[in-house]
Length: 100
Image 1 (cartoon, rainbow, N blue to C red):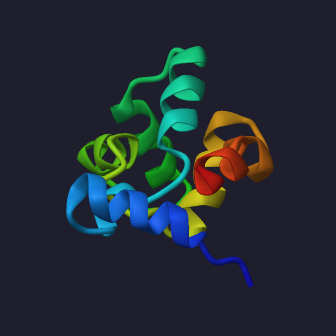
Image 2 (image 1 turned 30 degrees about the vertical axis):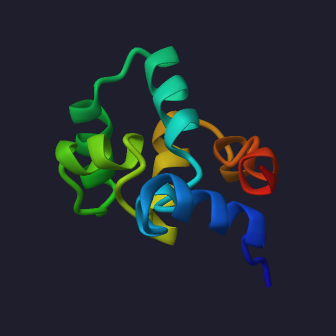
């Protein structure tokens, strides 16, 4: 089972004074980049997810992209499907983010 490195947790705590805001998710940057590359708005992504049966609002997409909201496993699946990519593509660069 994966767990974040102590240095990552320490840096988050020192930077923000608490951990959750800097460790809400690791896909925020990738989601913004991939969504914009597909010329989709946050509302488009939310609507497509709702069509898949994933109840999410465009404000939730905004929070995910701002790294202030946790992404549920089924949302990760849905986001990859909506963007036409694989989950590993959505998680690209996770090692770099977690080892800093």
